[in-house]
Structure formats: C-alpha cells, structure tokens
Image (spheres, each protein chain N blue to C red):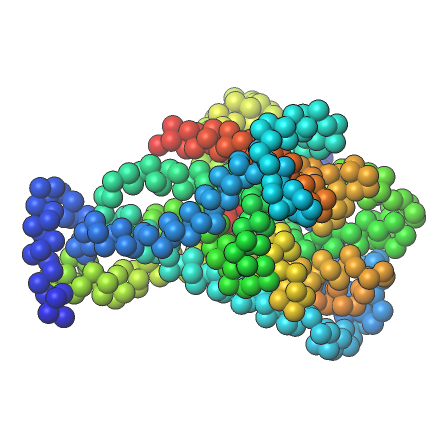
Length: 273
Length: 311
C-alpha cells in the first residue's frame, strides 16, 4: 500500500514536471532574450541590458505599431460596447417580433462566419469601398465580427439586472434614454467592462484582418509588424523581435490579471475566434 | 423634460393590450425606440458579416480574379469551381491535413492534455496549481504573432533551444515534420480552454459518489469511467465541438510554416489565403470558403441543438 502510494506520488510529480517543462520552455526565450545583449535562438542566461529597449524605441515602426494596435482595439471596443449595450438592452426589455429567432441567428452567425471563411469577400468589400489602409474601415469590419457574440453576452447581463430601479426612475419622469444612461449603465458596468476587455484582447491579438486590409507599414498594428520582423529581410533581428514581442505581450497579461482579479472570471472562450 | 414627463402614460396606453409586457419594459422604451436601439448593431452585422457570407456564396460561382480580364468582367461559371476543387489533389491534400490538424491538436491534444491537467489538479489548492494553470493560460492569451515566433525560435534547426536540449543539432522540425510541429504547437497554445472547462466540470461531480466508488474498491480508471464521465459527458461534447470549430478556422499555423514546405502543412485556412489572395483566384478561393462555411454551419447547428437540449 505504501509502496503504491509512493509510486503514485512519484508518478504525479514526474507528470507535473513534464507538463511544466512543456509549457515553460517555449516561453523562456521571451523572458530572457530581451535582456540579453546579443540574443541567439537558444535560451541563455541574460546579462540584464536595457539596450534592446533602446533599439525598439528607435525603430521607425515598432512603437507606432503599438499605438496602431491601441487605436484599433480601443476604437473597436468602444463601438462594440456601445452598440451591443443598446441592442442588448432593447432585446432584453422589449419583445420585438422575431426576437428569439434573431438571437439564435446571431449566435449561429458569430460562430460560423470566421475570418478564415470570410477573408475573400471581406478583402473584396474593403477594396470596393476604399477601406484598404483605413483604420476606420478595419474597425467597422472588426466590430461587425464581434457584435453578435457581444450582444449575446450583454443580453445575459441585462436580463439579470433588476427592473425596479427603471420603474421608479420612470415614475419620477425620466426619459428612456436618461434611464438607460443613469440607471441601466451603472447597473451593468461589470458587463460593459467584460465586453470591452474581451473586445480589446480580441483585436489586440488579431493578425489576419489587419494583415489582409492594411498594406501601409505606418498603419499596421503590432501583430503584423511582429510577423514582418521575422519573415522579411534576411536574418531576423532577434534583439528587436524579443524585446518588441515582450512589450506587445505585457498589456494582454496585465489585462488578464486585472480582469480575473477584479471580476473573478476568466476570458471563457472569448479570446479565440 | 416636458416630453419626458408625459411619456409614461402614453407608453402605458400603447402597451395596454399586452399588459404583462409593462413589467419587463420598465423604462417604457416601446417597440419603435427598441428598434432604433437595435438598428445600428444590426446594420453593421448585416454589412460586415452577413453580406460577406452571402457574397462568398455568389463569388464561388464566378471566375473572379484579383487581376487581369476576369477581374474586370467576372463570368458566372456555375459549379465549375467546386468541380475543380473536388478534382484537385491539392484541395484534398489540404482537407486531409486539416483533419489531421483538428484531430491531432484539438481532439487528442487539447482535450487529452486539458482533461489530464484538470484531473491531476482537481483536489489541489495552492502555489503548484496556480503555477501550472498560470503557465497554461499564459500560452493561451499571448498574441498569436508572438507565440508563433517563440515556436519558430524554439524549433530552429541550428540554434533552437529544443535541439540543444535533445542533443539533435541540425534536426529540421519545421521542414521535415511541419504537421507534427503545428499540431504540437496548437496543443500547447489552446489547452487552457479545455483545462478550465474540465476544471469547472470536475468541480460539479459530487464527491460522495467518488467516495463511495473508492470505498467499493474501484480503481482510478474505474472511477473515471463509471462516476466522472457520466457527469461530464455534456461538457465533453460542448468542449469538442467548440475547439474543433476554432481549430478548424485557425490561421495561426500560417505564421509558423506558411503552409510549407511544398504545401505539406497547408491546412484549409491557409489554402484559401494562398489561392485567393496570393494567386489571385478569388472565385476558386470563395468556393473553398463556401465549403468551410458549410462545415462550420454543421458543427455550429449541432452545438446549438446541444445547448438547447440542456436547457
């Protein structure tokens, strides 16, 4: 019995050690190379230099691309949150004709029309509407893709808020828009924050759409610039890649920590599409 | 404000026939304004999601090209693109690689590993559990462009960390085993979702059932089969459908192998990009996209029916 117990323990810790190695080893490079003077592909002990960050700051497209990522993700998140909140509120409170069918269709659409399935028509649509190299165009396209899932999630939040506050506000003569702004929005703030963070994370990591629709290097977000850094121009610049990759990754990690700490939930299924 | 004070009675009159809707429409929105609230979202969805999906169906029936004569005056060619596709070995090769990718990395890799981790850590609290979960989640949340390059660096033929660890200098993972590489990469990348889902599911298995199975002398495997699986069957199915759908539509392998070498890792997602946007055969690419859409539709309908039957 004890021998079996010991064997079980050894087996358990061996398995955990293997798992830890599998998940850690690919990440090690991102933690060490940015602080190494002359990094190679192999993970090495860093000599804790800050020069690589200097190089990123001087690169003509590195920091601007992070700014582009910020513009795209915050712009999309704001649109998604505003539109999803209005739509979800109306769908939650008013029995519009065909509401259930609409919600079902939204859920279906958001899962089947992916970037992969729609890249051909979206590219063509952007060409026809002159939306190539336009941040606004990309924001609209990304918003259209995220809205169905956002409305669906938002409606859950709306359904679970008490209606009595709205009733009393109405008795005191508030207009529907005032009620939405001053009563409903504060009640569903965690929901709005969730959808906002979810949308930011989604766009921040998105590669395919900006890669297809933005050809001007000055407008490209960090995802595309990272890819360009290691696929174009001969020898990959590992100092740039590692350090820039780290800078590009840190906001996602911070957002994740913030959300899971503050609201106690995770990005369930949200981050992938 | 004047208009606002007069509005409640009005709305009451409107709702008089269906009085029970009064209590749910607490702000007195009414159908018209509700429609106005929904409209902007629906317009954007129609323009940038529904229209492209319909457009792809039409494009698949034309010989549209990115450049040349067929770009100016595309012709309706009926099902020619689809016939081309099914008689094209490249398409079937791509489909077969996609099956390998979905089965290998999602169904076997992510589900297997996700469940294993959730099962191993089910009764644990504390730093070890947080460390393992944290690393698995980190692999999932980092931007795809960054993790792709991390794997390119890891698997590099001459200087990569993996070859240094294994003592295999010069072993070209991405050239000689591109499918294996992206399958293992995607297992690493996506296990977090399955791990969290099974972690939550295992929390719902009543401990008393496990306890009585243990007292009756059931082995670990018997406990799993007879007590745990019946409880989490619904979760397994949900999980399988969702991650298969995501993996099937995943474009990230493009950033590691770009479909190469020689199309040896050209899964359908990458295939569409290559034929439509690199070779410019938009019509043919749209036909392949239609196939992808239909497969997505089948999986999604299956999933939604499952969700409904649960309720």
